[in-house]
Length: 258
Image 1 (cartoon, rainbow, N blue to C red):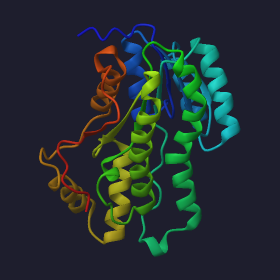
Image 2: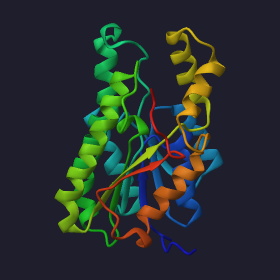
Image 3: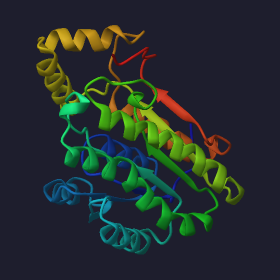
């Protein structure tokens, strides 16, 4: 299927590693022009060698001065903006709410939801000039289920869905569509760390915790970074021109995270 996105100008936050890198590469593979940011300078340096066509800026999305510089550099590199993918996020602490360090709570929300606000508020003006504008915000299945021992993360990901639906209503008259993507249990090192920390907190083995998580998924499987990237590329193509205000789960039909 020709997605007709050659030359699409795309900004992906936290795009030098993990899901963000898969998203950036998926767009680039379809002929889009891509700029990414990340806090990991080593990953950004590696990206210049592995994917020289993808331009980049070091940026912590919770820092508004850094985000302002990011937008300036992205617009200069891309010559405008058609797509913003708000992918930056952190897992936050694993603990009962009474044991959560307030600093960890604040940091999780500062990146996972306030960071999106910081990027969107500056991206709206250039997106209004696009003929195919869209925003995709990365939430999680923790944004539609409670997630015991992960209250900061779950709260932030529920907030992403509310932010997304409100933006879709505000920006629809400008032709800007806004959607949230809610990945399930994603294969990779990050979910392994999450399972390990939750297993430790619960006093059970890694395998027991993994089996419990997969037992709540109808298809009994994790999802891949590429599957998430493919959905986002489709949403941002002209093929997804009337999809907006949606919270789209990619999770193998997860039933809970308890």
